[in-house]
Length: 261
Image (tube, rainbow, N blue to C red; front, side, top):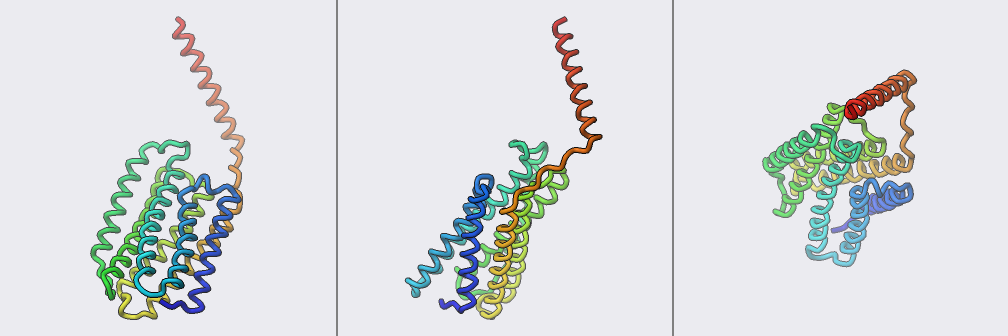
C-alpha cells in the first residue's frame, strides 16, 4: 500500500488535530465530564501511530489490514459509547434519568439498531474480498446507527423539554455531522464498490477525512471556550419562585402543627 503526498499530509493533519484536541480536553478540564469521548480521541492518536509504523515497517502481507480492522471495531464501539455518554448528559441533568425518558430512549436505541442492521444486511457492496465487504458493512452500520441515534436524541430532548449544555451540544453537532457524511460516503461506496473504481473510492475517503478534520477544528475551538453562564432569571419569575417558596414553608408549618395535635 502506497500513500500519495496528499494522503500523508491529511494523515499528519489528522494526527496533529487529535493531539491538539487531547491537549484542549485535558488543559480545559473537559476530559473528566467526557471520559469516553476523550478515550475515543486518544485511540485515534494510538491508531495513527501504530498504522504508520506497520505501513512503513511491514509493507508486505496482511499486517496493515489486520491492524486496521481491529482498530476499526474498537473505534466503532467507542463511537457508540460516546453517543450514550452524550445522552446521559442530556437526559440525566441532575444525575438521575429524567422522568419517563429512560424507557423511550431504550426503545429508540433498539429501533435504531434494528433499522441500521436491516440496512446493512440488505446492502451488498461489490468488493474484491470478503474482508473488504465486511469492513464496508461494519462502517456503514456504525455510521447509520450513529446518525439515527443523534437524530433520536435531538427529537427526544426537544419533546422532553431538556436543554443541551453547551459542550455537550458542540460534541454532538460535530459527531452528528461527521456521521451523516460517513453515511453518504458509505452509500456511494455500496454503489461503486472497491473493485469498480479505485479513484472514486479514494476521493470519497478523502471527503470523509476532510470532514473529520473540520470536526476537529470545530471541537478544538468550541471546547477551549468556557460554557456561557446561565442566564439570570427575570424579576417576575424570581418573585413567583419566592412566593412559591413562602407558600411551601407555610404549608409545612401547618402540617407540623397538625401532627403535634
